[in-house]
Image (cartoon, protein in one colour):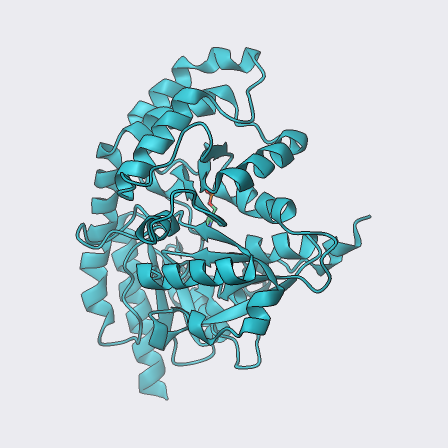
Length: 403
Ligand SMILES: Cc1ncc(COP(=O)(O)O)c(C=O)c1O
C-alpha cells in the first residue's frame, strides 16, 4: 500500500458528522443545511440541452487535450473576462479541460513537484480546500500553511514569507475568491507572488473557482492571468489558473472545469493526464462549450446570491464580527464560544447545520485561524437562508444573554 495514504486527514464533513453523531436537531424545527458548498440554483438550459444532444459521444474515446470547440470557448471566455487582449491565451497551448477543479488541483501537484527534491514544500492558505493538503502529502511534499488574517482581508500576509520558505517551495496554492472568506487576493499581491515565483522557481496554482460569483459588477474577482498580463508577460510563466462550471453555472455534477496558463507546464500536465486517464467525456465537453459561451445564466446566478447577501448581511452586522465577502456564497463569522460547541448547540437548539471553522484549518504556531469561527454556505433557497440566519441570531443572542 502507498504509506502516504496514512498521512491524509479526515475530510471536514466526516469530522462534522462525528461531532454531531450524538446530537439530535430540535424536533420542532425543520433542519436547514448550510454546511456543504453544493450549489442549488438551476443549471442552465443551454448546457442541459447540449448534453442531451451529445449522448452519441459515448461511442467515442475522448481526447485528453479536449475538443477544439471547447478549448476555443474557454479561451475566448478567459481572454474576455480577464481582459487579456494584449497578452492573450491561445486555445492550442494555454488551456486544458479538466473534470472539475478538484481532481485537477490534486493532479497538478503530482505532475509539477519533483520526487527527487529533498524537503520540498507545497504552500497553501489556512483555512484551505483540503484537496491542496492531500495533493501535497500524496506527492511526498510537506504542506506549509499560511494563516489568513483579518488584517489582510482574510488572506495570508504573503510578504511575511521568508526567502528560505520560498526557496523550499515547489508549488503554491492560492485561492481567490477564498473559501471560506469569499475575499480577493489583490492584483498587486498576485504580482508580488509572481515575482517571488520567478526568484525562487515555484509554480503558482491559482484556484479561482468562485471568481464568477462576485457581488459587485465594478469589483470583479481578479485572476493570476491578469496579474501576468499586468506584468507584461506573454507566456504566463509558472502560473496556472483553475476555473469551474460547478459554481459559475450550477453544474457541480457535470464535473467540468479548465486549467489555463503556462503552456510548458500544461504540456506536462497533459502528459500526466493522458496516463492517468483523465479525459473529459465528449458529451460533457459539448455541454461545457455551450455553458462557457453563455454569460446570461451566470449573471442570473450572481443575482440570486446577491439577493441572499442583501437580505442577510444587514441582519448580521449587529451580532457578529466578520469580513464582508466580495464573492462566492459563504459567510465566515466569529463565534462567541468555541466553534465546535457553537456548531453542535446550533444544530441541537435551532436545527441549523454549519461547519466549525477549526475543521477547515490546521493548528499552527500562531493558533488555528478557524478557531471560534463558522462557515455558512448560502446555497439553500433564499427563504431558508433567511430563516436559518434568524435562528442563528436568536441562538447567538441567547448565548450573550446567558453569559
Ligand atoms: C476552493 C475550492 N476549490 C475547488 C473546489 C472544487 O470544485 P469542482 O471540483 O466542483 O470544480 C471547491 C468545491 O467546493 C472549492 O471550494
